[in-house]
Image (cartoon, rainbow, N blue to C red):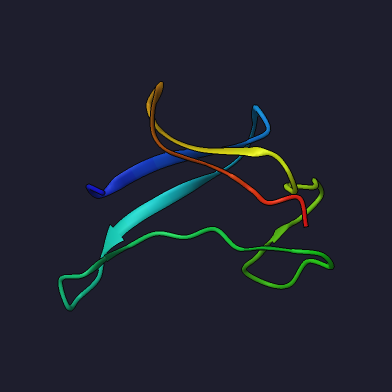
Length: 71
């Protein structure tokens, strides 16, 4: 995906923003990490993604979607 900000939506709720950046070696990456209990540099996982629709949006446009497994 192009460099920029992308919204992560799980089960219809916005849970974070993925910042996609270019690294010094020219590669492009972006990630969000959730943990419970929370750790430095991570976001508290305070929702259950199992069985939920996961969408990545560029603005209002869904550019990727998947369904988390139930288990």
